[in-house]
Length: 496
Image (cartoon, rainbow, N blue to C red; front, side):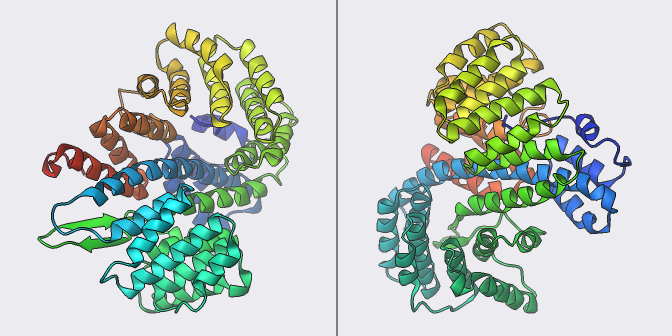
């Protein structure tokens, strides 16, 4: 569970009451999809419908669309962290394989994962090793130069990054889009990255082609960093996010699929920016301003903007009558924002105070513990009362508290306890169905399974998530590879 309000469709409709929405209105249907955690379906339904709406309906539609984009953004951010963990382990195992023809591309993709994890020194060694291999295609050589430049940008060495790319031939669409992606990351507007991306799209359109996975990632990166959300969202419409970036053929009908883990980060950036754009439109409506402010606060929390988040939470708390649960969520979130902004003692005091009067309410206790966990604060004082309540509770009402404890223990690297509580917080009558289980909780449970070497359980969770979020396929593939190598029997464990 996150800082997002997980209200029922009826509760959400109450928030936008008075806007004359029918049961078949696109906004109403999108809210029902949101309740079922079918975020991308809701986005694809509602965004195309907005231009034909009357002015009085657009504010509610903007709120609903912003909420769905924000939920997607939070999920993609969590999936990115999981992908980095699992992909690194998989690629390292793959690099150690000594049977059959060795893979060349493992060095490139391991370098990418290490760079995105902030381990530049290790990453560059793998990039250089890949570039020095015999028989590496010219296109792949250009790709590694772009990855080295992106690594330099992540370290703040923008001029060195641009120097790395100097003189690099634009070549084909993959190379041109890779150049544009790094230029956008570096905020090098003089290199006109958006114009390059637009030109690549025109070329593909004339040829009647859709962007391949690697080109798609680069184009999304350009539009995300350039702030062109309309272009980014149009690009995602109908895109195949489950496609591999490169399939390396190794002979004897053996092949390995490689994926760019950074696509999760690019998807997160696109979705959180789209959420802000639509939520700001909703905030212009007097009746929706307080609710929109709450979601804008969460969007700023996701992006590490503590001061801005505090301001939006303050607007929420000043916006007249609020249901008690929403007020507590806003107060807990405001304390998290204070912690991020350096006011750690104030945040700790606020969480302790909030918890003091609610030690018999598992939902609100979970909200407070989640806020502390997500702030990476010392939550020891909050853990004990939460445990006391969890031990004497049972039933679905306590699922959020079990999940919050599990997420806390996962952060504390107490993996056995993390699995115990996250598993207790899952609705087993529906097992891994996202209609009954929050996808964010399921990502945490999948990590707890992985940490406890429960590989088949991990795969089952990602298989279910992949039905609604195709990009999850790359985590499935990596996890499948780990399972196969650990058990030396790929044929017995394939489940998708």
